[in-house]
Length: 409
Image 1 (tube, rainbow, N blue to C red):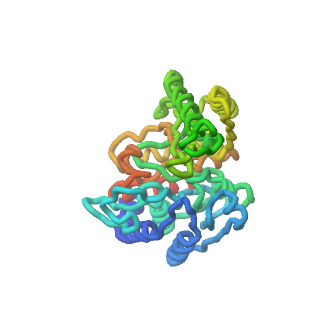
Image 2: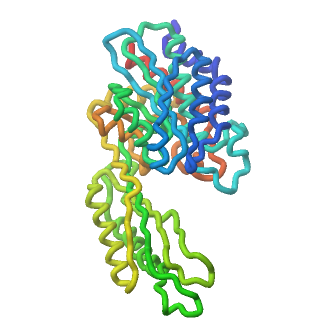
């Protein structure tokens, strides 16, 4: 006798070419953030979802809020699928925004090209693949014709790269959704239940411009910035002495990802701006972390006569802590992952930070799972030639569909 799981699997296999085409359409509409003009992608996604018979809610974030965050346009999408009363509502969240492609690509970043069983393109793995995973898992579930209770919501949002506050955070704050459980885009070979936090800061180092022929009449902001950089990088040596107890997460670390300054080669630079990223393990107190960073910066600046600094927080994303109520999701994903992939699917933490923390902060148990390889490195996320293995996409769709069936039957 054919089981419902086998029927789900068969539907996904029969419609897999359509799922791949859907993902290609997702990749072909750029969502580079910055600049963050992401409303066109939401509109294309809404058109395709409507073609599947889904009613799509378009929730445009007010322009003034978007611009205040340094972006251009955001329209978040919700698809609500309601079944019989008495069951859970499960949200499936994936984000469409992504960093710009950068250099070194051998495939068109927006082409959705397929080679050797892999689909290439910016956001192919993180996380437009899970626009496809979640959409086709829901379609397979409903094609089964089984009596279901509760509901599913697709949350397709566009602010993960800038912290998620105008993505899931905005939908939750506005009361537009209140699910019982949530699953956010992830990879196929582990169920992530915890992740790092992230503090991002902008440090403006102010000196005094002067002609390079008479440098003593100025104060070199770059020399001050170098002193600050050395002090910050020294912290990384100390961070390695702190170990997280969460599997998959090692220790805190700090990265300076952008430096801007100076006006010309023959001018003593009067201003240098540093942008830093500090990853926080779940055991750390974010308030204390920020206070320590500010102290280190100020002490280094004080040692440089004539240098002034201004430190501005750009992002405070707290670590994701697992909530006790996530067990039904975790257990179902592990069971079906084991059956579909033929291996154990462990729980783990990740050094990334994601939108899913925003669900957990509001008491909604959540996990991270979706289509992708074993590691971020394998996916080439945020690097050239980002890709997703089509077989991972197929099998993850089956795992998610089976999990939904277990939780909504």
